[in-house]
Length: 179
Image (cartoon, rainbow, N blue to C red; front, side, top):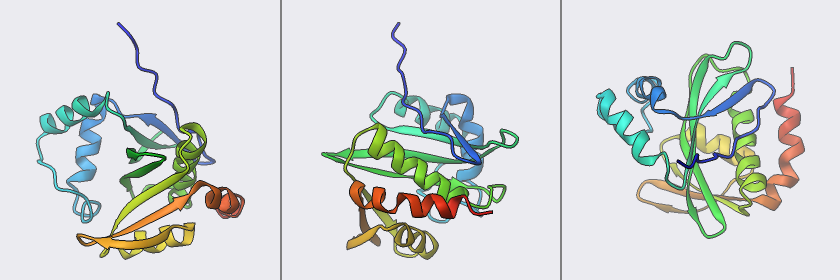
């Protein structure tokens, strides 16, 4: 039996990432069915079996799905997925961070995802679909350097080129390292 080696996202100052396992289904389902976190997510059934099945079905596909943990105590505090690889571009989403997240967790997570997609996987662009009503995430991505270049089905279409990210990277790391 061949073991699939999943590339790993690097740890950040306060976070570490583990590839999703079927045993994570209950945690993921708890996030995806929590009204506090699911307003901008695609709907799911409340059946644990369905979440387990989704993980098993997607586990060996061309995507990467991680549970985000706090370094301080190992507590799971969110999810992020890298997927939708088209040509030289990738997308990321299924991004949830709980209220238990460290102060700069969103920024640290984004830096880790871009490092993973651009440096580890070798893509030169990140494309994204941002729900028009999700103003907080839109503002976050714009501050990161994401450019919006269209709209489709209630979504803003954005992109972030690797060259721009690597120009911005030190500024972003300085913000994430602020005390």
